[in-house]
Image (cartoon, rainbow, N blue to C red):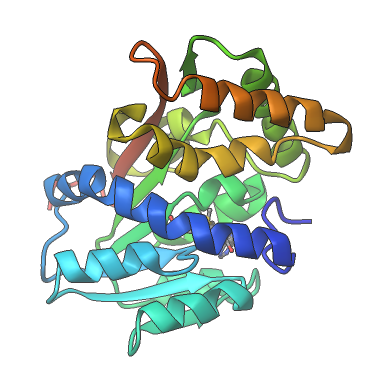
Length: 265
Ligand SMILES: C[S@@+](CC[C@H](N)C(=O)[O-])C[C@H]1O[C@@H](n2cnc3c(N)ncnc32)[C@H](O)[C@@H]1O
């Protein structure tokens, strides 16, 4: 079972509400990293695990002369991506066709944003190895989180327990909620060159409600049926601290750029 099964209606509904906000909030932090690592208006970018296409839409408006395509294995979420990106190539992929597409596709930047954490190690290695084996010079950019970077002040035991439960749940299904800080090691081990990482703390200074609307649904979904008391405690911590000027929620955004060649472009 994949760690993120969008054929489940409740998950799809939650994610098509959350992903556009997440993309909108984080894109201003991500765009400078893209530019620093050679993404320009003449780039051709493939977004692997493009989800509802919100990020792709923002990318296209920031780089209007670039070309782009989105790939995803969920037909349900690709319908949303199509609505947001009329005329853009959006490909339904599966484990059989993805390596071939990635080996021979016409692009020079591959983006993996919050998709590697949902893949099993086998699928992840297969996708990255295909990108690493391309003949064309290719920049791979991965953007991820790591649950170890979450911090809540004042501390909240219920949120910490829910995050741990979420991590275990995702790991049991093959995913990895700590992959963000492991990306440089992963890319180097797979033979990529010019591996560079940046990490930025995203704090509730972006807005208490905004931060929670992006990450709260993910945290709360860690609960299983016996843990609904923790959900209530987490929500009441959030409500109680809304006007506390000393309260803070934070999590880091990890961004890695790597090349399938070790020669500078
Ligand atoms: C959390 S969403 C992120 C969507 C988008 N990249 C974003 O940042 O808003 C993860 C996406 O990765 C896709 N995904 C996960 N594993 C995949 C795989 N093996 N091949 C293609 N897409 C995959 C999921 O279907 C989902 O749409």
